[in-house]
Length: 143
Ligand SMILES: [Zn+2]
View 1 (cartoon, protein in one colour):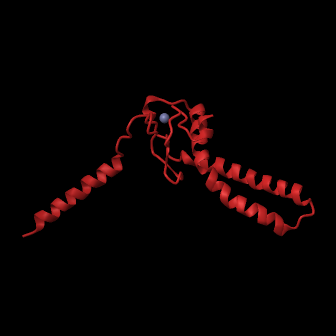
View 2 (view 1 turned 45 degrees about the horizontal axis):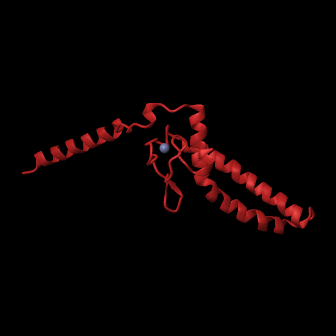
View 3 (view 1 turned 180 degrees about the vertical axis):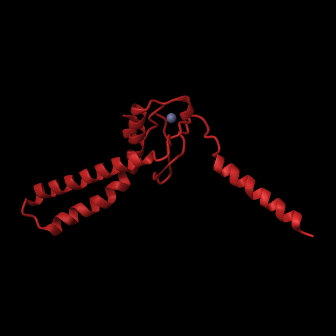
């Protein structure tokens, strides 16, 4: 239910999105839940958004046929369905993210590691160490 209201699925906290409501924060500002629990987490939200947007387009066509009649021309149907198809994925995006995170929590219950700071990855530490070693070698070669 919290996913439907753009609240944190774990604590119900608000303010998960940065101002034009399009970007979700990395963590819940209230409880510290990291939303991207695994790499590729948001793919589920994209799938949810695709299904919801397709349903919205289909619904708009059905409504247009109810209003204008079933012998309505293709242009009329496109004039109704096209804006819906463009606007609904954008409007539903924040909802798809909180809904998907809530769904993910049902499938994989939260653990304490979902609230912890992510340890720095080995690759970034390694490349940084490598870079400084190179700089040192370069300096020694100088006059
Ligand atoms: Zn929270």
